[in-house]
Image (tube, one colour):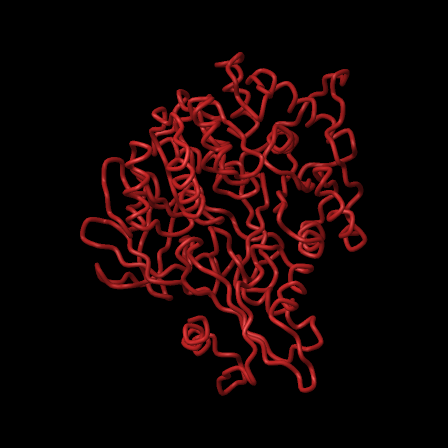
Length: 492
């Protein structure tokens, strides 16, 4: 079954039930099915062909969901664009994906327009969905489930983000895994993170639509608004990042809402402090269930219902296979540290137009997560670091190389190095080191402002330290490990 058929099946089963709620708008399953059929036909009438890419530069909204499912039904590939990115970052995604159309929310559109001259394949940027009230019915193609459904861009070990390719099969696989975690048609699912990420797409929207549940959309995360929605609509489930969970806990302490409809809270992106877990259980009446996944495959592990293993990533979900292995694929002994590798129905099929990284992502059919873990005798995984040098801040992947390249655009920068440091709120914070050129001076505040004009706010370093020279190895490469040792001395 492709993702378009997933919606059709739910619309046939519960046509009048609310599928989506956004602010004061409620859309039934029948209405969502009809509107996405019409939008899919309109997209094909614009001369798009199967496999063409359509960029979605929009916050959580009815329009975002309609665009996703219209692409799925038309055999087009949805390319969500992070609404926190700056024009150069947007331009890279539009150019690399060779998107033909870009739907950009009106207040975000100027950034997309600024990037447009660098995107020769982009035909048009649209700030609204077309009026489909009088659109004639048009037959839609039968889309093979094996076709690419979405390209999700994620920062990696290279400066530019990689386009993770998910098929209808792999995204359906994510919904199957969420069904095993207990998502049912009786749930009211709240989206507190953006659907441009695989977490909200694969763990909230799609399993909600597949099961015939109601999905409540929060356009931008706001703690009071999130709790108000739980109380107003009787939300029973949400998936959050640790930082988001902390803000919701603090808001519930200050102004308690009626939250007794909540029955499932999943948190991923980083470990959740034990004290916060205890506070959440006290305020919401349910435990936090920590979940691990990645853009390439989500979910992978989760704390089982009724269990508590603070600090653990949980155990592997039922319908996938995991192993802990060395770089050659040899299994390590129980309790020893190795790389977590996964065979899952939710595994991606590789990276868009990047055969080298695609080949490196898989080892004899196993997806390499790049995360170092150990597995205990009860089957629980414990995180021990990353093979990759990605910084994970508030659940978002940040490439050190990308920030370094932005730093090098400043004439005062001779050398730069970027690392992550532990942070109690966001998991990690970004720290930059700069060796200035002779005769050049710049303040930390001015450098951070310079970066804000070039990269998304969440990537801007919390601190920028100026030092005479950066530590380098025999080959002249900056040694991030030495910077990790230097950072606490300067921060404190």
